[in-house]
Length: 251
Image 1 (cartoon, one colour):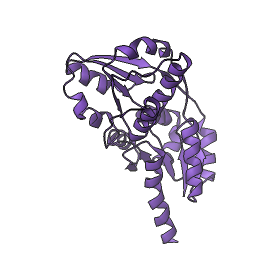
Image 2: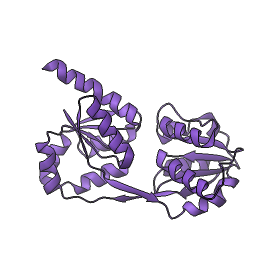
Image 3: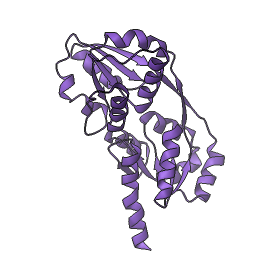
Image 4: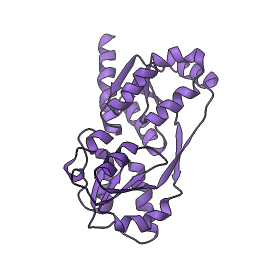
């Protein structure tokens, strides 16, 4: 068993180390880099006006908190804070020193079902995100009468690669599992794969954090897709470990 980990930065490296500790071989191949967003400076003006603040990922919290710290400003104590996932919520809660609400299933649909987002008419809601994504949250809350704004606190840049070089390397490494944690990265990954390698790619067991991405993955051609229910390293590892144990039992 060998896993191709495509999540970027420290989270991707950390996941590879955790897999290795469990006897699972991992190859790190990040699909994006993450940098400060062009709208990060506007956060200082938007944040104090918000009634509700939604963080869509741990990266949003990291960049936002860094910007506030550098300007010696603090997170408003009067706002209600929400996060799409548990890990992001824990990270945000540690930064702001107050409760952060999050759904049991880490996706936009379940976030929108939280009681804190049901009666939002006239409220100012600030969505902290990267460059693009989470339009469902924006559109739904706008329909509910909220005054919704984005703040793109970080930006993702795709890392192009040549599948004629990488796929043979992955095959030599006996890669049979693949982790992709966003729909954007899934689309970009498939675009980078030359036609002659797609049948091999689609035979990999693919792990994704939501049913929405799982549906998209099956649509493009993946045969076996596992919905981990979360993009946290803990939940990704929990999904991979039983498969490793089954593999050992078969030997």
